[in-house]
Every structure is written in C-alpha cells, then in structure tokens.
Length: 340
Image 1 (tube, rainbow, N blue to C red):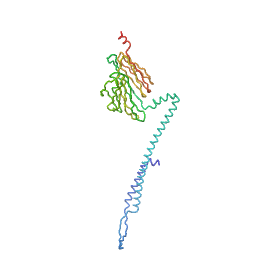
Image 2: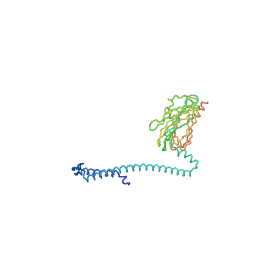
Image 3: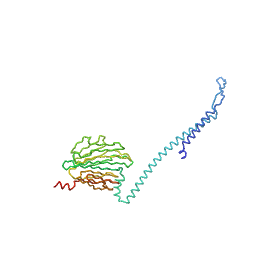
Image 4: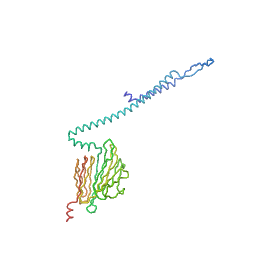
C-alpha cells in the first residue's frame, strides 16, 4: 500500500494509457451488418439491414471505460489518503512536541529543585522560565545639563532596546515604564515602537498640546496605543498597548525629560524583563562626577572615561528587577571654591 501511495501517479498514468489504447482499438474494430425482420399488424414481413459495432469493439469499449474509471478512483482515493496522512502526521507532531515540552519542563523542574531551594526555584521560574518577553541590546543614553535656573539640572533619557517575544503566542501590553521627577517640563516626550521597519505605535508630546497641572493628567497618542499618565508629584507612567507576534520582536525608543532642583542627582533603572546585552552612555558638564552602583548578574564594565562623558557596557544576561543606581554630583573642589 505504501508503494502504491508513493508511486500512484505512475500507476494512474499507466492505467490511462491502457484505457486510451483500448478506446482506440474499440474505435478501429469497425461495424458488422445484421438483418432485422419486422412484421406489421397485417402480418406482412419486412427485412431491414442495419450496422452495429463489432462484438470485440463493444468489449474493448467496456474495458476502456472500466480502466478509466479505476484510474480516476485510484487518483482520488490515494490523493485523499495522502492529505489525511499529512494532517494526521502534523497533529501527531504537535502532540509529540507538547508531550516533549511537558517532559522537558518536568525533568527541568525535578532537576533544578534538587539544586536550589524550592522557594528560590519558584521565583526563578515565574520571572525567567515562564517569561514570554526578553529585552535585547538595550542602550541607555543620559544627557545632563544645568538649566541656569537656580540649582536645576535637566536629564534627557533616551532608552532604546529590542523587545523579543520568545513564546509561541502573541503578547499584548508588553511595554510599561515608570519615571520619577518633577517640574513643568518633566515627563515622557516621545515613544516609538517599530515592527519590521514600520511604525507600530508613536507618541510625541510636542504634537499634543499638553499643559502643566497640579492634578493627574492622562495623555493618549492619536492612534490610542500609547498612554502617558503624569501624577501631581511629577512621576509619570508610560503604557504602550501593542501586540508582538510569536517569535517576533519590536524596536522600542523612549525619550524622557527629568528636572532635578539641586546639584545632586540620585536615580536608577531597573528592568521588568530579562535582558541580554546593554550599553550606557552618560554626558554631563565637566565640573561633575558620574558614578554607577550596580546590582546586576553580569557586570556593567566601564569602557570610556572622559571629563564630560562616561560609557559602560554589559555582555550577558540580566535578570528581572535587577538594575543600577547612578549619581551625578558637583566635584568637591568646585564646591569649596564657590564657598570661599
């Protein structure tokens, strides 16, 4: 049966050729004459000579029709069987993958639980193993400057990263961020999500006619996918409602302005999702020092140190809720000179 299924087209072709040959022989067999005697109501007889196909022609025609019918039946039957086999094999493959995945999870659970306490494993499982989202190639750009108004310092944060959906299901509401700060100009200014080179969601505060307020304000992008909530204390929260298809990624860029009312900045960044590889660039006035205090699984190494710029880079994984605290403060000798 398997040989027939694998070569049924050849078999059907042979049958069609055989049927065609028989049909040709049937047409070439010719006709024979036959005398037919008829009688009317008065009893008068009359003889009629008629032509009819030869006996072998009729047999060849029946055989040809039978072979053609068999060829068509075999073609349809085997075609349907092959389609059913494909559907069944796909279903079995999916079932096997599901079983294999379940076995792998069970084996991993059993093995890992023997190495670490169960409480630690449950946290690791929920934050890492079961996580559908991974950030990759993050780039933090911090630009500090004195505004010239009292002791005010402005920070422009530009955050870029790739957001990968590593699951087999679509993920929605994957992007949210909270920012601390105060001042009239504080808040998210721009947010862009790109998917395969096309804009998926865009937020631009300069186009939205927002005003400073002592009450909670909510700004929404024109496409309704980006919502920024600004609280009276100056904190703001960004939520981007986009869908990431299975095993796909989007590119995210956010720009945030923060105002600090003294010559000392103490802030930080902590990731919501697991992260792989990142870099940080900080620029600031020459009379300031920039420092980082990190709590990361992979070390954030300094790769450049200049009077007004510092660069860091991390290669490897960062777990959820890990991050760093950074400080920016005036150099002590300058503070002493100003006091004197």
